[in-house]
Length: 167
Image (cartoon, rainbow, N blue to C red; front, top):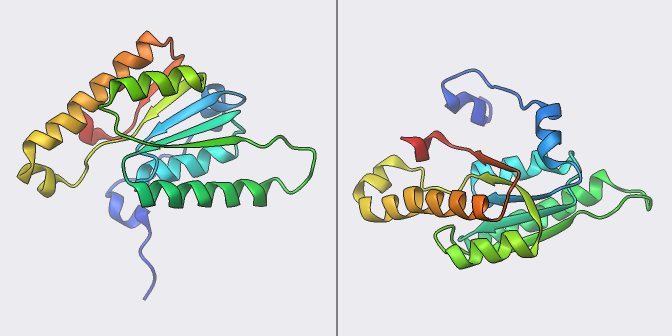
């Protein structure tokens, strides 16, 4: 008997992140992750820690999850950077929804976001099938709002994560 890892559930080989490719979008930059409190978003946030962004803007509509991932990332950052010679990466936790155009625009401008990892989406297919209107609103319109605001704000990199939104 052993604990189940996420890799056991993927049904495909793991594709490791390319640190050089990710670093070009992250190191020294202000990075926003939408859906930061979810399983995919929070893991992405953990991987971003090692690439030393100037700022991490975490956006999610799940209050406790956002609080939890913010605390975890702060502890992770502190454990990696134990010396006094490092600069603290700013962590901004924003409670909100990607469908809120005003919030998205204000956040991207205020925090000088250069890279957006758009992870926010409802991903539990049976639940979304029972709630089609909300699924369309969040997954499709939320992605459209995020992408349009990113373009309007001159975001350098907009990375769409999660095939659920494409489907």
